[in-house]
Length: 366
Image 1 (cartoon, rainbow, N blue to C red):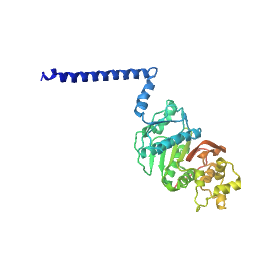
Image 2: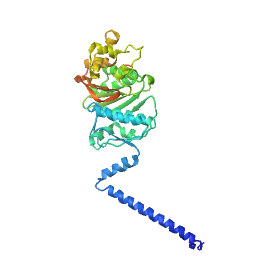
Image 3: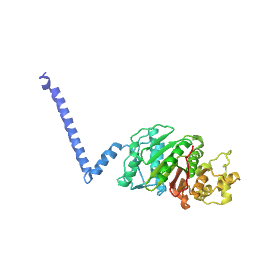
């Protein structure tokens, strides 16, 4: 056997192997040298972030979240953010949401993030993200358990119920769920008044929004759209915030697409001729006060749909009502209707209930 290792053939093979091994060692040494150079001036937290959130996701599309992640206070930028995510959802691209530079995040944005994340994961499209450096923004995100859900798998189910044990409760459904509405109102009234009360304005708002999800869906995809609602309990402030979102086509696109057998067919031309409105912001105001419904039916308005929600506000049953749909953001409580620079394909509604709002003693029924 010893003679074998002294043959010329073996010596040549051994030299080739040694030469290749030496080249690999040199290449690895150069790689480590370049890596160390690239780390110069980088703090330990930054290196840790790179190790956890950058290196493992190099082949993901990075989507930067707005530094102010609030649908109400920064609506145009958040709509732009949603559009980018939707584009890559349609392309089935792997997405990494960059949240590290977020300095302010509101509870109304949590439901948007969660709903988009579930859409990706339910359709087996990889979705991940990091967390804000800002401690308060990180606290709110932790409270929502968003990071926990990043590592769960979801199916395209009819119903999701997330965050039951935190102060943010997020639900999703495809149809009217009056039982859920009653449960949410019961818990909200306990937070606000310390006892169960009837909140007819909240009940009306929830039911009308659930119904509108199908009304404002693409006609070819009725029933396919999930609506989402997130509820935040502020026990110290005796206030409960509701954020509702559906990813249909939005109010104005829906009205424009009504078929000839609908009482709202051609309604925009009729309303334009009668009220001479200038843009969608003015049109939303006409929808909320019942003028559009009256024009379509020639009958007094009976309190359904968005006008019914506006009536709940006027009766002091809810407060701080905000509606975002297509290119309009309406702070209805302040009568501030404005056109956004970006258009949202869907409808987002936010409202609050506090101890100054009207309620009545009794038990909410389905």
